[in-house]
Length: 143
Image 1 (tube, rainbow, N blue to C red):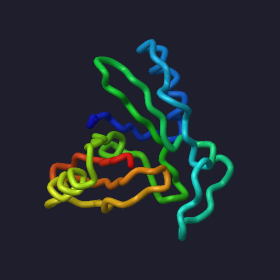
Image 2 (image 1 turned 90 degrees about the vertical axis):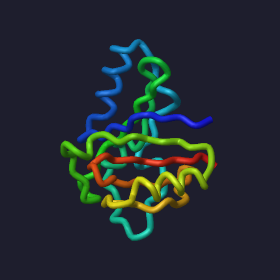
Image 3 (image 1 turned 90 degrees about the horizontal axis):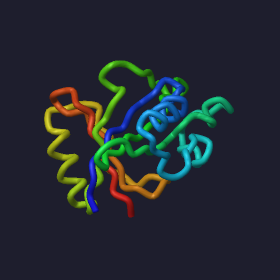
Image 4 (image 1 turned 135 degrees about the vertical axis):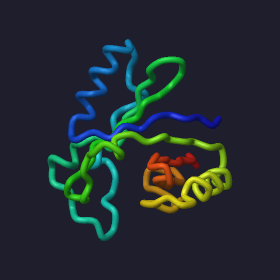
């Protein structure tokens, strides 16, 4: 079933933030925290140091009304920096790859910083784009 959630980027303190949010909302993480060291390194990427391998790659926490927030830590070794404008993303999870392709194409028109839809090591068909209004959209289809 399709859903929409909000993805938050953190500067190395995603785990602390989500522990705080879990207390505030009285909820628990959905599944274990996935860390950068839990997935194979991408070809051509520099190896991650031990500190970065322990950072949060993905976490999910339900808050109110069925809405889920997700988190990741940005990695400086990958040229990522946290700033207003890249600290939150709408995460769309359509039912099919075709729907994801159509949404990605439409949202990318006139935008920038687009990553094409592609198979990812965590088992998703994934892509991301910054639309022409400066809003970041991520698309995930779990195969």
